[in-house]
Image (cartoon, rainbow, N blue to C red):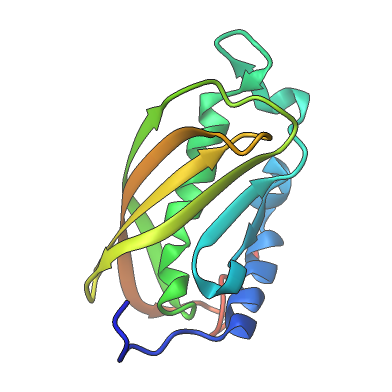
Length: 156
């Protein structure tokens, strides 16, 4: 982000996260979205449940859960630029480095570069010990349309 670009306030990002966290899918997965210091997107699975596990027939977190967390993390990076605009993930590329173990999992995403309609982002998945277990790169389409609520994602 350039120095001349205006950034959303922490209050705007917190409102976005609060509304997004109320969505049915986020509640179903048990995920929490946040924007620490307005610098990155963090998606946390604060309690890995039995239904989240099953990677390689083990107690590791299932790859589908990891992919969903990366989708949310990458897909919410446009909020770091403008939390009022809609956006949609267009492409994700995941690399699994080691099994994701433990009772807490966290994905962190940042913007690599952004134009007026396309954004490139990258993310890392951390296990309970803080080790990087997976990486993701993604492309997000930025819309000119605002959220139905006018300021943040609509709650479904």
